[in-house]
Structure formats: structure tokens, C-alpha cells
Image (cartoon, rainbow, N blue to C red; front, side, top):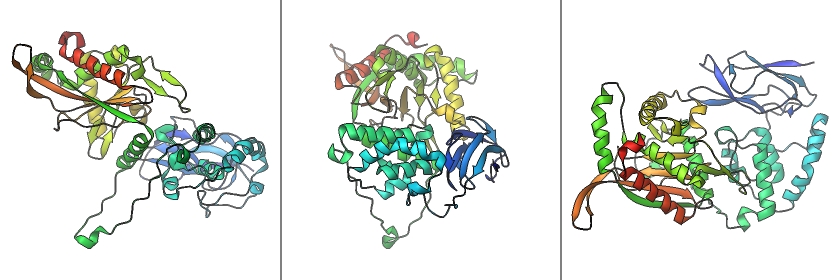
Length: 428
């Protein structure tokens, strides 16, 4: 007899958005398997199955708003004993205990499973436990001997999906395991009692800190980075910007150098389409994008977030300046939605307002490049006849060397420098 699955107590939230549906009609689930993911403006959480059974009807879809007591799906209970006390990531259920409804799927998966298990697999339990994946995906990965810490997530917010695990296995079978193909074997960090040497204070990382750290670590160890440095003469551009400030300040609009950089980057992406691409999950195809969405790294009290300015090629400089002001406020007030931070083509990380001379930004995958900008300063520049004072803007372009070679990296920064040093009116 079918039972209703309702949203349980989710804390002090009137309504939350469904950001991922983790099961489909006909799927067999065990007690505590994740069914859907929901997200408020402060946190994301998963709704688990109250008991084992088969999903017979879905009542929600992506983007729906749900609250405590909302009906999300119908489940036909199975006769299996609940397994809530058995962690999915440490114990794999025997094949004989699987519901009959899952038999065709299990049979279809036997060939890749056997192939993957032919090679010895050593799972790093620490990285496996920290991987962002549902219990069913964890179980599937463990059966295959796949270390989830080595799998790049292609799902929402970097979640590792079943397809990601299959693609990883396929890649290993074709190219060899990471351990045999030059991969990094990283020893776990030692547990240190820092209190032995003096007074300490422990503070938990924010959710943004944790997610950002996880994604940056993945990007750093899986993407071969190269950083190209250059300086751009923005003397005329800065004078032009300052002349605009009084007029727009009265309208409540802040015209910053970053708005000009967005326009210059769009011009660069049009000139060099390879920078406006992404590798697919297999790493064998390059996806060229016909749109121009620019990510802007925003520093907030809780950590770094990257909202995206969509269709920047279709917006004026003033439109971009207004939107940047709006997204900065939303970011600091924790009102950005997941959709506000997706679909970027290239990210700009500007530290000019803080200081520093140069830095090496980390590529924001699946993008293939990121532009870092430091504080501009006056420098003597040789004109051919003498030294002239010029306001120089330091640029640092990091890129994925699998997609972009050094020559194109230098061409891109040279092009940006030329655009920024050219006629300012062309960037309006």
C-alpha cells in the first residue's frame, strides 16, 4: 500500500526551493537514501527516505517551492528491513537483497562493474567521505572501487552524479588509473594539537568557505594552470571614467573600472572564441558557447561568491555598472540564488580595491580561464623619446593549458591591454 512522503521539519524556513530531484519513478530506495535536495538562501539540505521501497509517483519538480508537510512523492514500501543504522558509504548491500524491480538495472551495470573491479582499488576514506554525492551514488562508486574524491562532479553545485562515476570509470579504462598516469597521491593532513604551544580559538568554516575550498582544490589539482601576466595603460580610460562619475553619482550609479573590464573581456572572448569554451565531462570534446556571461568574484563576510552578469555583450556599460551594484548587495545580504551563480563563461577577480601587485587566480571550472586584476599605479613608461607617467593596470590571466596554449594566452592579454588603452568611448 503506497505511502505519502512529506517534507519533514526543515527548521525556521517558510519555503525552500527544490534544487535537485535525486530519484525517478521506479527507483528502489533504502531508508535514509536522499530523495530531493532543497535550498534556502542560507543552506542546502537533503530530504531522506523514511523507509525502504519503490518510488511510484513524483509530486515535485526542479524549482518548486516546498515547506514542512509538503507532499513530495509516493512510495510503495518493500519488505526489506530498514538500513538506516548501516552507513551507505561503509557497507554495500548484497546483490541478493536488492528489490526485484532493480534487477534489470543491476544486470546492465554488471559489465562495467566487473571491468572496474579487475584492477586493485584503494579508496581514500577521508576524501570519499567528504565527496558531495548521494548515498546511492556512494554505494555505486564503492561497488566499482571508485574513489569519489577523484571524481569531478557535474551535477548542481558540483554534486557527483551516477553519470560522473560512469564517465570516470570509462576514462580510467581508456587512459589508465590516476595512480598509473601521473596522478597525485596526497597524504592526509596530520592531526595537530595546536593548544600545546599557546592559547587557540576554533571557529567553524562557513558553508561558503567549505564549498569554495572544495571546488578550488578540485580545480587546482585537476587543471594544469598557466598564468600570463601583463600591464595595461589605462591613463586615458581612467580619466574618461572619472569624468563620468559626477553625472552618474547623482543618479545613484557607481561607474567603476570593473564595468569597463567586463566590456573589454567580452571583446576578448569574441576575438578568441576558445576562451569562451568548456571541456565536456569526457574531456574529449570542446563546447564553444555563443553567449557571453561574465562572472564577478565578490568578497563577502562569509566567503567568496561569483554571481554572473548574463548576456554582457547586449548590455551597455551603464547597465553593467547598475547590475554589478545590485549583485554585490545581494551577495553580501545572502540573497543570491543558485541560478545567479551559474552559466559563466569567464570570471573576473579584482583585488584592486584592496591592494597588492600580482596574484595567480585559480580557474573557475568548467570555465577555461579567469582574469585577475590588481591595483593600478603610476609608472614611468618609455615613449621612444623619454619617460612619461602612465597609469598601469596589472593583469593576471590563468588558463587551462589543456585548452589554451601559451601563445594564445599572451595574445589574449595583449588584446585586452590594447582595448583598455584604446578609445574609451568604444567600451560604452
